[in-house]
Length: 175
Image (cartoon, rainbow, N blue to C red; front, side, top):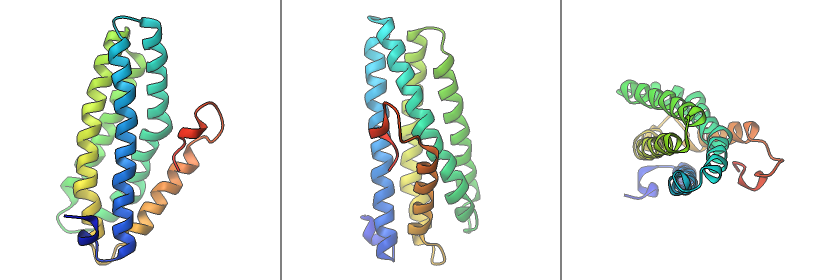
């Protein structure tokens, strides 16, 4: 089923598609960095440390601010909908788990440990994004008194305010 058939308002359908694309971009970037770390962990510890630092920076710059924005904007709106409490509580718990996985990655004692933590982060993030994109966002898009387009704009604005736009990774800033 397409986003157009899920959301009664065209702007909400567009927001649903934009959110899905954004989640896919984050997941893709995470996948690439985790794959590089897994490849380097045993054969090139120095490279693995640089890759780990970049992966942690990605999480701190984009993924964790994104989850914080979702909690601040999407979750309160979704909690108002009948039957959504447990779903939204589980999504907030996911965000806490993602933060803990990033902390574990940051403090892993060896490149091999970092690779294991990165793989766990990757798998968990993929599952979380699938639930966010497949359950929470359509729930909001279908609610007659909620404008997903407005909420999504606020999520993006919060992420943009948090993300530094200067420095070596400026081309990777949340847009």
